[in-house]
Image (cartoon, rainbow, N blue to C red):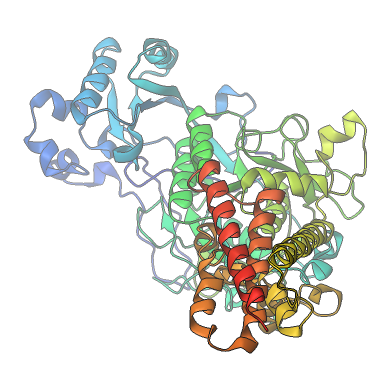
Length: 628
């Protein structure tokens, strides 16, 4: 998209690529896809085939022969295509069969394509076993015929052209200067409220310098950033190393190691990075690559996905992947594009937060795409982060200033992760809150086409959420305390001792958090402060946001365990009662605020909160009534 030079890629089974000669300072790099014609004749026939394919019937073998033999992708464009059709790979069609099709039904469907098109080469996509997506290679003039043939077939969910997408950045002067973007979005003050602990952000890109492996090395300024296992769709393995540099720069904006006396800072520097490599060393890939990357990331625990890439061709397969991720509670953020015109995809897709780019004067960058699909804006000019050079080898690292919506998007992804780390785990709520608290620079309709809801303001966003959460929980705690006191008074037991220090400590620890006021005086960057500022129900974030979604500590089990283990000590009963009141207040806030993702459905979430809140209040009443 736009004026960039890097790109996206395809899996090893789909494209032959000739790599440039290795630098003299490093060992020769083997070709990612060995030349087909360089292989012996026997291997040319068998390359990529499985034993089952070799021994199957002749017709099936002809249909499902080696995907590398049948469908080596053409090289990516050397420059951005001038027309929309120019982004399509000539003759390549994505055929997305229904997920419940059997192997025989898939074979029958592909045989229909081969028969009607006078012969078509078909191969399985990387996640074909789950998605039933096949890729057909036909004469370029027959692409529309294939789409017409299968568009109404009840066995097919989607059929569309395979298109290129491209990483979205504009290189600039690589001199290290002050990160104006961090102060512009309010990062220093926002860090007082949270830094994304326990949240996983997937950077779906050219890879990330996250590990030492095979000549690649972890970035010096990612040394204290935690990376979780990712996946490389280019080489089809778990080593998603960055051989381009785009992905590491993007990841740096999300979570560059911070306060380490080295290099640059990241916005959500305590999140966990998940590298997912879908773009090759030139920065090119396909819409199917991106769809597979989105599905893989959400299926493997990503809470936020950043997509600093795109192209002008919308893809229903890609939109389906986004819908799949959203259904699992994953926030999806993407660059709007650098065309200076309409928003590209996936940035403009349904369910994706499309991000335009602004400069240090809050003006829309001249290269930034605009219009329908822009949801929010963020800094995207002269953004400084560490990245790799020399193809990620030789410990070559630089701190360039890059520009593009690729650089804007990770600001929003990082802010989303910080919200998730505060308990706002529902994707729709994350998007709503980010939009509501964005800084409006032009409220007109034309301004909304440029900036969406406005420019990202992380400080205002996190402050608003913190105040609303603390206020709601304190208010509910007061209400529930009054209710319990009334019940005790009705039973003619008047010594509830609700103003005792143990009772108040119990309420605060499980309701708003013992040090809920910490951001006014202390920063939650520091681990002890962050622990004490969180309510007990949020402590599971230190295990991970996925654990918190199950709400194991937002349960009547917490005050119940305290009740049965300490009931013999009368002096502790006010504290246990306070824990009951605070737990009920926390559970009530989940329902009142509506911030939580419901992995088992809204009805189950409501039943869980309501039932556990009642049980917690009963425990509180029991303890206060007996606290003489």
